[in-house]
Length: 158
Image (tube, rainbow, N blue to C red; front, top):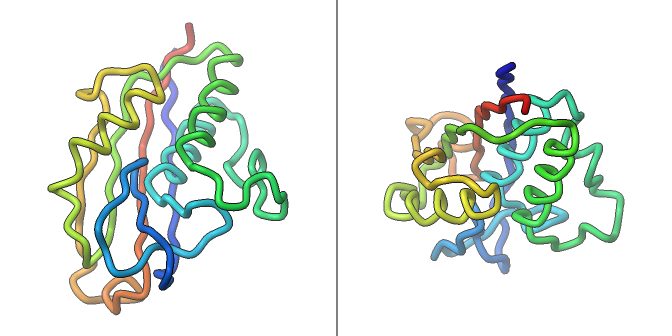
């Protein structure tokens, strides 16, 4: 049985924080505000994987009211969520992730993000696709107030 999940996440930019996307620190004047490291890529993918397995959401597993997750590495959250999914009998097949931001450019970092994500999921980097899109100057993303990510993940029941 093949299952598909969709995840979405967004965060505001914040001064004094590093920008982490897909487990990669990206040079940028601002990071993202959040309880954890605010990695929108990892958060969207975590929700997509949990959703595909019918295992709830990132907020249910790692609530921002729990001090354990303060400044947490979101790749650890992804790893732990994937362990939950595997315990339900599912295995990762592939994912497609779109980062929506006016800046920074995602393309130069996409391969490294894919490699980091693949390592966490025990997959080949070719099974992880990461790309960037702008919002053409519209909305909070267009005004450079923050960024968002959308992820689609496919799992197979083993």
